[in-house]
Length: 158
Image 1 (cartoon, rainbow, N blue to C red):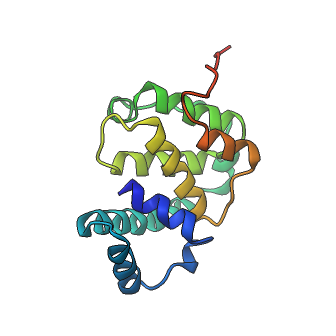
Image 2 (tube, rainbow, N blue to C red):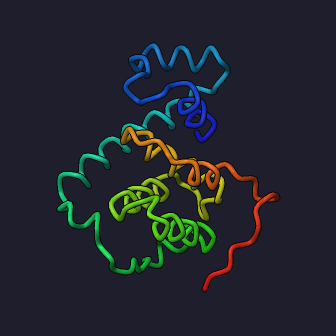
């Protein structure tokens, strides 16, 4: 599924630039993606669109400027893992994600069906959430999302 998502991000500037679902499925199949992988990715993206609308409609905009601390439920901690939670907190503290985007990232990570979600997959999820909202990551965020773990210097929490 994640390979399909990365392909869509790299190929289409915006979600509305994607072909209609039937044409997209044919194109992805012709490239060599498996049918179940395509179906899973497109279903995940459809649910992402629903999540974007639900969060935007159901939560007041002041939530986006909240200064509270997010406490993770046990299920969320089990699925996300310490590394992913730390990365989400880093993105939020650096103002690269607002609280609503954070919640969408968490919801989509839980829907990925993997426990724990690896950091590389979480980075794809963050990228797809921003892509689905028509937001392009700034240079620093883009570097964080695509920095190889081997090249990364360890972050110290103060």
